[in-house]
Length: 347
Ligand code: TRP
Image (cartoon, rainbow, N blue to C red; front, side, top):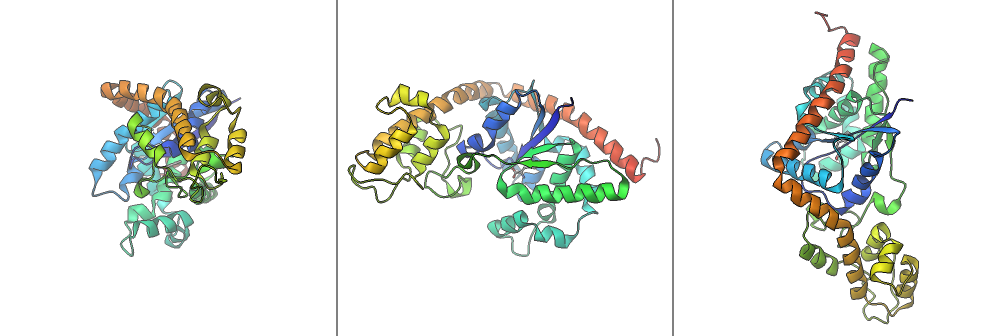
């Protein structure tokens, strides 16, 4: 049976953090080892430029950081095709054809875009490229005939928009493009890891992230400052484990092995939670444990990062090779699209 094609990307606007790790990176590393899928992962630098056109240095720099993050968490270029959006000109040409299939009114109604326009405070000065990036994203997805697109909930309207474009295109020009399916994480904690301040989302603009590239001291300091239960003042006080960022992180990262290794008074997280709720368990003890757990997760990643930081040529070579490989796939789709539209005049 043919393998299913799975495609995801990230905008290079900063380094990746633990939210990315539990929300998607970890999954991608597992998926690349599955026989069912052929995985493409790419750095969406063109998309990042749609609201950073005046700051290309940031995109250039973040591209390098994201590539190193990918390799450090264990994405393996022999299993996953890792590529750079801007190096595939076919995506831009596909975008051109799709632009004609979507109305301005439809774009302005897209909930993801609406939210992002508000967040960025564009007012009436919305860059055209930004407003139309859902169309460019449809080009990304369809160029690779993606069956499955793992995304966060906030991206669902973009997948919907892509499906619409596929249906419209196929309706006019014939059955050429494949409709993708969104794949949501089924683990609530992993869908949205809160920031260290307890706010709903880890986000660079809120300054509440633990980055995959943070060193040990930085992580310790961040964990020690983490939001817990504001009413848990004295150790004896009963504590709340819900809406308590430390417990949410433990939910996401702590295993029974970690308890054996670092906190043998408890067999598992349930026992720890019960004690916290009863009272008599201090935040410092919890945070020290969480720090040890996170160090276990981050140390192997740091080791690989140190290697790739010393071997940047290798990092760019991997992106270059991946982009060449990806381009062949996109070329094939583009040829079919041109033929379907009937603009392959010289064939
Ligand atoms: N919009 C995605 C993000 O914000 C990046 C992206 C661009 C993407 N093209 C894609 C994701 C295609 C999945 C499929 O990170």
